[in-house]
Amino acid sequence: MNLAFRPDKSNFHVGSRVQIQPQSLDNHPKYLAYAYGEIKEINGAEVSVLLDEPNNQAYKSHITQVPVSCLTLVGAESKLQELEQVPNGTSELHDSQPILNIDPEFQNLIPPLSDEEKFLLEAQLKESGCLSPLMVWKGKGILLDGHNRYQLCQKLQIPYNIAEVELASRDAAICWIANNQLGRRNMTPETASYLRGKRYLSLKGNREDNLKQNLPNGNSCRSAEEDSSQDLPDGDNPIAIDTAKALAEKYKVGERTIRNDAKYTQAVDTLALTFGEPVKHSILTRADKFPKKDVLELASAASTQEKEHVQKMLDNKLNKSDIVDQIKNKQRVPNPHHKGEVCQIISKGDPELKAFGGAWCIIVQVNPHSCGIKTWKEEFPTVKPENLETIYGVCEQKAAENCDRILKLFQKVHEDYEPTYMAILEALSKVRDPSKFTPRQEYLLTILEQEYKLLPCASS
Image (cartoon, rainbow, N blue to C red):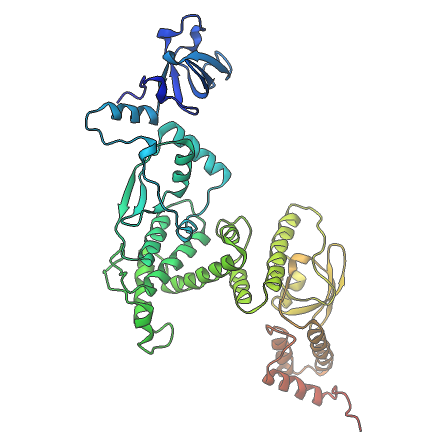
């Protein structure tokens, strides 16, 4: 098919890709013959064309005025114009193309394009048109795949085709979108985990959907309501196990990975509801560094605590990532910690802290670029901020008191070195909440204090 087509002037519009033909150039420079460009302005029979930079460097890119009669459309628009000249042709003009419905939840399953990716897609659409059809839910008119192309096609007035997909339910639509996206290569591990989890949750919770949709063995998948009626503990439900097993086989991962993906998906969605979709996309595209354990921790806090407190946790984690990056780049950054703060020791990169990795500590001094800390057995005057991870939701005053109690006991136990007592103290140094010991932990600590006569004397 000839990609250059000469329509009447009504077919040209600003943004059209054109080629200059030599037959009607007359007094115009002959080097313009067969040059390519883009229409920038139309004034009656004259058109302003921004010429492409030629490979032979005969001239520099510039705008030139040429008659409409010199121009032919090229690329996607010329294909459309030729089809319109064919009797009984099926192509339609831009204005008659269907307007598709955008479902926000479906759209947010599609990772957003970076500025560079969007620029490249726009250039491709201008050059070649929209080659692949946009995927639409049959009978609903809701776009399933092609949101970025659809947006650009509307903006640039580029024609597009659609292909319809029959789906039984909304959960089935989510499954289809997730599965379609998982077939793409350019996605982060976080996005892949999120989409696998989304598909697992949709399959497991939808009565009508079944595992025949691109899954091995084609076993029926019942609803969550049917699952609960089996009165089985979570994780032993045969439907959940079958769903996890089928997805694990399809995506070449373990069943446990699929179930962990589901927890991750729920956590990410919780954060999206709390802070907005940009936070979700930031996590999944790695725009900000969020380890999975941080995502799960933040989501748990978002479900039980005030938004302001969770926002502070989020800001601290974002600041922590920035600090690590800047330190790696040898930039001096302010110390984010404060005196009295309770932290967990991260020993990576500091041999002196190896024996204390995972233990909690109290910050007793804040220097410009380091912290002095107190642990269960000794103090360190200079610890880097990246080796300290804040423990949220603890009472700093109570944690400091417990630290002093254990440190005093360590000094006594160390003198006559009793291995069993030392093991108890070391175990207490790694509890999750050092401000709130369990009754059994408090009992053991009190017994040791009584033996070494460290309890305060009772008042008479």
